[in-house]
Length: 227
Image (cartoon, rainbow, N blue to C red):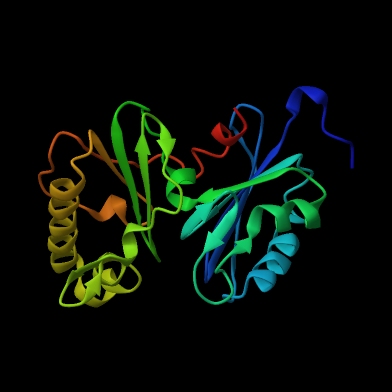
C-alpha cells in the first residue's frame, strides 16, 4: 500500500471509549473523515479495550497521532472510573502501545466544542453520562457530574442514561431530561449548556435559548487537542 502523501498528514485517529462501545475514526488534517467509523463491543477492563482497539484500527490505515475520549473523568490523561479505570494512564498507554503521540480527555470534551467565553457546561447522553465544565474555554479537570445524586438516590447517570430511554419510552425519558436540564442550569448557571451524545437528538420540547443540542460529529474536539 502506498504511503499517504505529506499533504494528507497529519492523520488523527479519533477514539471514543464508552464500554461496552468502542469507536475509531481516521481523520485528515482538516477533520475530514478518511476511514471509519469502525465499531466494536468490548469488555470493561482497560487492557482488553486497548487490545480490541488495535484490532479495530487495522482496517483504517496509517495514523500519526491519537485523540481519545473516555466516558468518565480524565485528568492529565489519567482516567477515573470503575473496573480498572481508576487512575489508569490512558494517554500513556495509548502512546506506548502505538508508538505515536496520544492525548486523552473525557468524551464530553471530545464530542463538543465550546465557544470559550465565560462558564460553559457540556453534557453527553448515551450509554453513559459524561460532562465537562469550562471557564473561558479551559476545562476543569476531573469534573464528573454524572455521579451526583439527583432524585430518589439516583444519580444523573442512573436517571437519564444507559437503558433509561429504552426502559421508560421517549415521553417519560424526555421529562427526566428536562428535569436534569432545569437542575443543572439552576445550580451551575452556565452561559451555555451543550447537550450532545447518542441520545441528545431524541430531546424535544421548548428549551431555554442558552441550551444547545449538538448534532455535529461526536469527534469534534479531536483536532482541537493538537492546536
